[in-house]
Image (cartoon, rainbow, N blue to C red; front, side):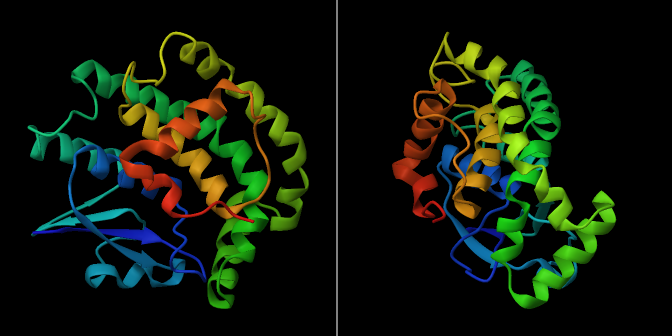
Length: 230
């Protein structure tokens, strides 16, 4: 049975952009599993599987439904143990949890300000109203005010990525010689920006840029199938 993955899309259903969905997309490819993507706009998420979730990704595997990219990765690891490991052992799970927490504070916070208007502009009119109302309540300011600090956040993002650059001086992936879920966590954030915004975040000679290109090439270029925003 083919697995079903609910993704997040804007007005263009072929451009799914959630960073957390991308973590799961890469995890499924890593495990070599066939899956069907179901693009879903913000305002349709409550209708998924009879109201099964308020967020995506949602993975449906037969009668089992799993929400949250980390929970999905753990489920795939446990359910498909003969496929390549996403963690490389229990220590890898703990390490990935650290990378997840680090990425949420040191990557996603600056990225949010940098690309928030690009996200808004790619939504349908109905989703734009939803996105503006929910995000302005969440962040306590208009989207435009949040975006006004975006340029400064590019430098902040670059500085926050320095530990990653140093790690990549030892091996090509955060997982070592081959990628693990920790790589897909960080990849999800940069892929979020790549498919939603034309803003250049990193220099071409940045080691993180080289790592990101390697990730885009994985699984017959799965990450490149959604083209970069123009």
